[in-house]
Image (cartoon, rainbow, N blue to C red; front, side, top):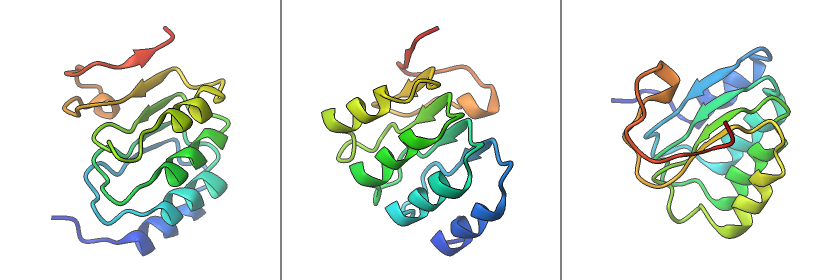
Length: 121
């Protein structure tokens, strides 16, 4: 059971050297928390925000501004993943791995992928 809220996630914005972040299945995570991370945690390279029910296209699109982002898991966020979002993410020149669709892998922890992903490598 998760015992922290978006207030706790917002506190992470002070972690200016944060590289990897796993917030998978945080049903209460909202766009404002994701947007704050995108603004303040510019060293983020890998983010798993799969199955976060409250996220919208707007929040996810804010991640395209991260200059070091190489891997993003937004699977199981079906309502938020749109063509417009994918166009925004396509502008993220450092992005190498984008996971969409059905979740099930644990790529942040180094476990094997168990679902399809898009990658340029």
